[in-house]
Length: 438
Image (cartoon, rainbow, N blue to C red; front, side, top):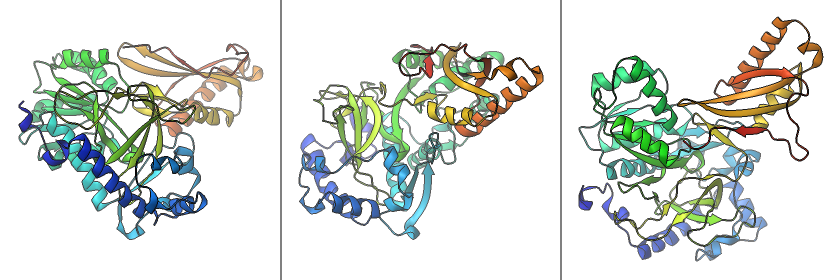
C-alpha cells in the first residue's frame, strides 16, 4: 500500500517531531486548565503549590505527582470529573479484581476522539469500506468491544458485534457474512483453530479473513507468527488500557516494528519503576501517560505499570509518532490470562473467607495445547481433608464459583492436604507461571 493511501487523519498522522512537541505543549496547557475543574486535581494543585499556568515545558510536568490505580480507587470517581455530570454520556470500568473497580467517564467528544484514534489504527493497516469486521472481544463495561466497534463504524465497514465465546457461531458468522477483518484475543484465535478442525474447515481456505487485530493480553512474536500462518492473515498488535480510554492508544502499522503511540492525544514518559526517574530513550521502563484530549475525566501522569521501551529512530511508514515495544510485563504482581487481569490478592480474599480452607494456596498458570489454564491449589484443614469426600467436592465447587464471580473466569481448583504446598523462607510464592514462551 502506498504511504499516501493509508492515512485516516493525514494532518495528525504526518506531523513532524517539532510539530508534535509544539501541539503537545499547547494541549497540555489546555488540559491543565480543564483539570483545575476536577475536585481531585484542584486539591493536588493546592497541596503541591502548583500553578498550572506556570507549567511551560515537559520538564515542568515532573512537578505534578503521579496518578496510579490506588489513587483512582481511594478517591470517589466523580472527584476526577472535570465537567458537569450532565455532560457525561458513557462510563466504562475495570473488572475490580483487587477491590473497587476503576470507573472512567466519557463525554460525547471523548467517545468521538476515541473512535477516531481506532479508525486511524484500522485504516493504516488496510481496513476499508467494503470490509466485513467481526468483533470477537467482550462488550459491556470492558472497553475492548465498544472501542473497536465505534472505530470500525467510523471507517464505514459492516460491523458484526459477535462478542466473545460461542466458537462455532463465530465461525458460522465468518463464513456466512464473508468476514475479512476480526478483533480477537490471541489465545482465543489459537483456540478457535481447534474448532475449525472439529468442523472439518481450514481458516485459510474456508474464510475470507485477511486482517486480525490482536490484543487484550500479552503475546510473543512467535504467537503472532503462528496466528498469521494458520489463518493466512496479517495480525497487528495493539495497546490500550481502560484508564486511558481503552484500545487504540498505540498500534502497529504495516511494518510491524513497534506500536505508534498517538502523541497528539497522549504525553508519554518512561520511568524507572523503582527510582521514578525518566530513563533514556531505548531503555525499558514503566510507561506513564498523560491524556491531552479527554474532557470528562483527564488523568495526569498515570503510572500504567506496563513495562516497555521507546524504539529509537524513524519508522519506514513515515509517521513520526514514537513507537513503543511489545509490552514486556508489569511492574506489579498482576497477571493476565485469557484477556482477564487477575491479582493474587483477590484470589486470597476469596479463599480466606471460605470455611475449611487452610492457610496456604498457590496459583499455577499453564498452557495445555493452545489453551491457557489457571489452576488454584488450595490447602484444606486436616479435619475436612480426612472427612466426608462429598464435603470436599462441595467445597471445591464453592471455591470455583466464588472465584468465577470475583475474577470473571472459571479456574481449575485442586484441593490438597494441609502442608503439602511448599513454603518459601522468604516471600510466599503465590503464582507459578508455567506458560513459558509461545
